[in-house]
Length: 317
Image (cartoon, rainbow, N blue to C red; front, side, top):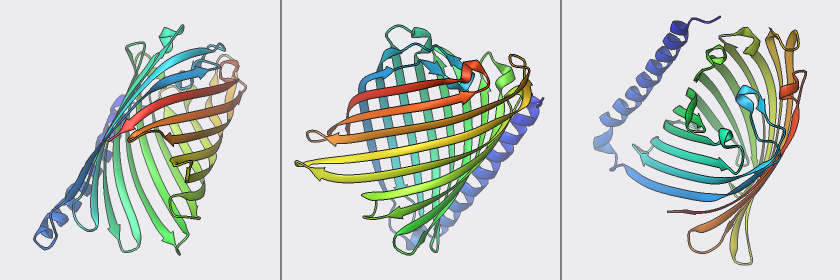
């Protein structure tokens, strides 16, 4: 069991450290402002709406699986602000909203709000950044999950074709009405990118290790995972098209005994997703996506297959 005050103090300490880093970088930038040009900034807005077909409506965070399919309407809104504070320092602010509305399973209607701030800084050939994210999710209009994340990262080019990126993410999770699932998570990732035609064609592969400690030890776990991704952007029939193919695998071993099976839980997940964004007219585009996942577990409610297909139309400006 983890005292709530310990979780809170850990989060506050981490936030303080991030605030110190941000203030230090901004202070250094301000000292050099007389020798640097005025900051450059941009604002972007993205709107998307569409339909989704889900073969198995579920909420994986709480192991709630219906084993029944349904169709949902989707709405997504994204706002982004980006500024160059100096030749080596940048600032990004973002807000994303999403809402799903199922035809039959109204209790699974999911609304999410994500606010993020990231400060980036270049040190020689190394690009560094530190990001803070606040996520709030609601199911059927009722608060469900609140999560705060802090994530420092660093990347460096290897020659002209490859890049290595490493990141650490600390997450603090609070489940409304389910205090035994409240947890903090430590995760590290390492990714290698290989560029064929810059950002228009590249592949990447990476590994992730994570450790989550929950209020109830049956929900605590350690995991390892891999991710492979390929991206290709091109023009066909006068239209810009961006495609992506991703595979993700994870092996998750829980620490405590799960009463329902009188044993420690063990999950494996393998998910393949593909998507294509196609420019239509002016700033209007369509996004087609498909995902298939195999979730195996010695806990029956977490052992299932799922296929999700969606079609969305959007605009950005």
